[in-house]
Length: 151
Length: 437
Image 1 (tube, rainbow over the protein chains, first blue to last red):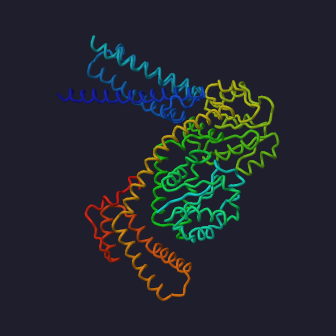
Image 2 (cartoon, rainbow over the protein chains, first blue to last red):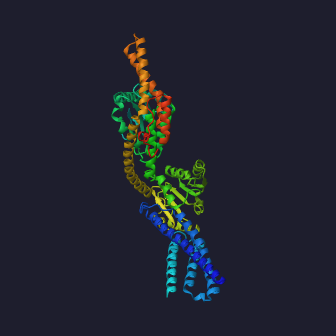
């Protein structure tokens, strides 16, 4: 009974952490879209189209960086708690679980994005394209994991 | 009560005429005194800027008001009527109120939407009110004017679109950087435009400003003026590594900055974005530079295009603002007519008019030998005296904020002045408050 209770707590924490992490990446995704739009305006020198107020490139960059950083921390927590859950409670071979593999790839992707940006100067549009693609991939992971659960 | 504006502006008169009728700030005591000393003018104020000279006045008799206001304007500047007649305009009542609203909201300005004019109208009002040259009507009108101008600023984006080239550059920088505070700026070359841009940028509290020029001495001079740092042209690329905004304005007849150079710099600055403003003609920065990632190059034509687009946007906003003005003029008159008709003010005025008439008839009996022009002068003086004495109490009565306050005030008024008119419970109808006041 006690064991089940801890397991439930673990499971809910695991899910909450992952959902928050995904939200963070979602924020970076939105910032990325806004960045691409704002940059297009500046590059085409057509500043009134679309005529919606957008934050500055610098602000969008900061928002994306911070949300990715927090997202990465949360994803790390999610993966670790997932491993623990699988190992201790479900005794399954978690390494072969596709959602674990996809989560790990997502984690690796965002880490690579941060390293590329900060270490190799992949700033601006390249950084944001990676961010947007990263989130699309993450959604795909989630969809697949859910599907796998059903099958 | 009639309200008049008499004057000329940048549309109606050339500069030399405007200069001729300009009122110098130092003479404010003199001209405001002289304006309100005119018999037919109850109250008045003068708005005098480089784009307009306008005398606002209120009085009872229309023809005399127009005549006296014009006479004041011409006499004060010792200018013959023939010289300025074709340029003068006169607007009365509704037209004049509309005009004042439009002026304060910067719809009548040379640069529509420029913000200084509201401050200038405010100053004119404070000058006049400081010298007791305004009455209750004027006071209410001006308060309304300021609230209309504020409403227009709030509900339209008439002042938001930058339309001077140097200011457009600053606004553009705001699309790239979250704040210009502490951003490093480099000015390459000299010239008026470069200086103007430097000034605009400095107003945004930017960080260090580097000045690079062919002559180091010139750089040092500019740097001294704008508290910047002069650098040698040879060190240009080294400093560029840390600069966020580069303003180029040299007299060189060819491209000084080429893509390869900026590409090298960008790699070293790890692609940190840079905003390059090339205001030189012919251009000094190769347009291909704009193709590089995280480099934003705008030349003088780009800035002008943005400015003209913004001008169109302002014109669109001005249309919205004109509609607001129309609505507000109607509302103002509605409230004024209610106020003028309010029983308490009428009974206050009629009571003291009666006192004045009684005293005058007694005086007339005693001054049998006085000529009729002298008597009429005494008449005018006494009625002006009564009006001025009652001005402050009426002003106080019209400025109360809530209907409860008004109720109490009317009660107090009735007691102090021993008026027959007692406060009614439906006072709210008499003094409809303005939403924006």
